[in-house]
Each structure stands twice: as structure tokens, then as C-alpha cells.
Amino acid sequence: MRNTALRYCVLAVAFSVLVCAAAVLHLRASASDELPRVELNADNIGPRQIEDLTSKSIPRDYALAWQTMAQALEENRTDVLDGYFTGFEKDELTQRVKSQMKSDLHTRYQDRGHKLQAIFYAPAGDAMELRDHAQLDVQVLDGGKVIYEGPVNVDYIVIMTPGADRWLVRQMQAVQGEKP
Amino acid sequence: MRRLITVAIIFLVASVAQAAEIHPPAQTVAGNPITIASSGSGDATFYLIGPASASKRQVQAGSDIAVDSDQIEHAGRYVAILCASDGCASSSFFVNAAAPNRLSLLVHPSRVPVGSANGISTVAFVFDNFHNLVLKPDSIKFSVQPKGGNEVSADRESKDGIAWVRLTSAKKEGPTKLGAAIGHANEIRVVQQVAADACNLRIKASRAKNDYLIETDPVRDCSGNPVPDGTVVSFTMTDSAGKTTVDVPIKRGVAKIEMSIKGRARVTVASGVVTGNELEVSGG
Image (cartoon, rainbow over all chains, first blue to last red; front, side, top):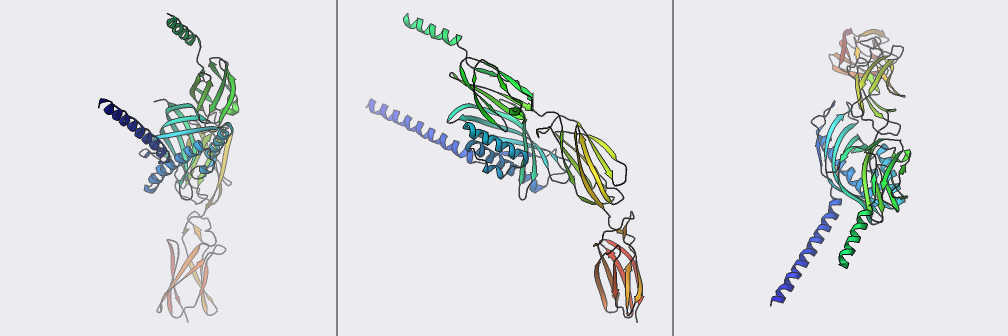
């Protein structure tokens, strides 16, 4: 009787562990499909005031830019960079993906969110400068082996310019960072 | 006792054997070569992950690792990783932009009416030789050189890599050169200043066979610049039959129209929001 109870107990614990593992794997897989969380603060923007529509487009398009960048660097694909990057930033990321391919490296981002502060909006509305405080978990893999991983807080200076139907990232430069 | 000795030996070996470590400088300047000190021993793999590159090569742990200038041309966060048999060690560092030496200039609009207060905006983005945004404040010289006029300039300090200025267009039409300069960089754009709205619009009437020829004086703006050909002028005739409006583009500086007038009529003229004089005409 006691043995049977113990056996059921072990089985229950094993089942729970399996369920938890499956849940963790599922959450991890769906996290990369989710749009990163971006909060925009445009209180100190100038000299032009931000329009309502622009204040919605900027965080949406910036989040999509990060999502596509993460996809490009994890899967070593340059084609996904066309959507939300332009100019030198697109060139830089393309170079990065190509050099990752050459060395069989991959970079995996777990995005924990962005606090975006708009600091300059050109008088003609054709460029915006922002400061992003990004919180990320970064993994670098050589083949399938993780060679680097860690949580990182990085500040970026970002320049976005309007395209036909969206804002594009033209410059994204990490300017300071620390481990949390 | 044997077990104790074994544990002691393992502990001793472990404390003597040094795990690989890597010590890049905390920050450096784009395009400058650096040397990264490492510790440990034996064969190792060195990785350098930057904004525009990800490289991998074999090195000896414990030796200094040279990083060429072309590997750190892009400003941003880099991660140096050293993987030896005992695992991987990593350290991150920042590459800052080099000295400002390029400008990217946005000037709007490309055509502007004369005398437009703050009608021209000029935004300059400051870059180094490697297209990195230079965030350190620096003085940028903005200049305006109208055709046949003297250059006027003003200095503005860049903030977060950007400096900007608003300008009022000149009183005289024609191309104006707008420039911005920093270091060896000097960017110039040309803005076409065109006449503003018509001013003192006047018409006169004269007999032409059976009709009247209604004609404007040369159409000019308030600064005396001729309003461009193609600008529309509206003539409106009001007589006993009602009101008739005809739009005519300016041609060679004037707008004219032949009108058949029977009885008494009143003719007025307008261009955009500007109205001119009024004529009373009697036809046969």
C-alpha cells in the first residue's frame, strides 16, 4: 500500500516536471514571435510636436524593426531587414548577418522591452531622433553551442525617417550599457 | 586517507590551473586598433561580435589578442569571447564615434517664396569617417549665400549628433546656397527662392475691335519680384446678365483676356487671395 502511494507520488512529480518543461519551451518559442514591448515618451520632443498618428506609428514600427532584426540575427537572414531598416543601419545589419553566416554564428535575443524617448523631431517632419533603453537577454551560439549569454541593458541612439507607409530605422547606435 | 589525498591533489591542480579570461578596454574609438589581454593557457577560440561583424579565429589563451582597426569601425557595443577547453569567458566594451568629419544635411523646402519667416529649415547630422553618429557636442557653422549677395553665417552647437536652424528667405528671388560645415566636411544645398503672392495687382482696359482687352500691369510681389509665368489670375465681369469668371495664366509677366462687353460692366481681378483694382467699362 505504502509502495503504491510512493509510486504514484513519483509519477505525479515526474508528470509535473514534464508539464513545466513543455510550458517553458512553449513560452520561449512564442516569446520570439511576440512583438517587443515598446513604450514611447514624447514629452520632451522638439522643435516639432509629434502628431497623434506618428506617436502610434513610431513604437509600432520600432517594435517591428526589433522583431525582424532578432529574426535576421537568429536565422541569419538578410531578406527580413528590408521591411524596417534603411541606409547605413541596413548595411550594417546585412554585414553582421553575412559575417555570422561565414563563422556559423547565431545571435538570439529575448526582448524584455524598450523605453523609447523621443528627443528630436525635425521641423519638416522628415527625421526623428530617439533614445532607447533596451532590456535584453542575449545568447551567442557557435553552431549549436552557446558561447555567450547574459541579460543586458543597453541604451541606443536611434534615427528614424518616414518611408511610404511606415517609419524606418536609419541609425541605431549603442551608446552605453551595463549588466543589470 | 587515499580519498583525502586525491581530493587535495584535485583541489591543488584546480587552484593552479587558470581559467581563460579576457580583458578588453572598457571603451575605445572607432577605427583604432586595440589589443585585448587574455589569461589562461592552451588553444582557444576568440570571437568578436559587433554591430556590423561577427568574427571567429584561433588564438593562444594567455597571449595578447590584436584587433585590427577595420574590425572596430562601427560605433556601438562589442562582445569579446574567449573559449578554451575549460569553457568560455566574455567581456563587453564600447566603441565610440571618431572625430566629426561628415555631415548629412536635410533642407526643406527646395522652393520657397521670398520673405517667408522661418520658411527654410536646415538639419545637420554629424558623422565620423565611418558613418557613426558623433554624439559629443561640437560647433557647426551654418551659412546662407544668396545669389549676388554676401554670405551670412551662424554657429550652432550639435546635441546628440544633430544641429538645426530655421531661416527666413531673402527678399530677392533666385537660388540661395545653404551650407553647413564641421571639420573637413562642408555640405551645400540650393534652395530656389521664388516670388511670393502678387501685390498691387492692377488691370487696365483698352478697345480691341469689337471687344475689350483687359490686361494686368506686370504682376509682381510686394518686394518687386516678378510672379512666375503660369500663376493663375482670375478676371471677373459683372453685368446685367450676371457674373462671369475667367482664369488666365500669367504669360511673360502679364495676364490678359479679351472680353465682349455689352452695356455697362464691372471687371475685377484676383490672384490667389490677393484682389486688385476694379474697372467700370461700357460696351456698344
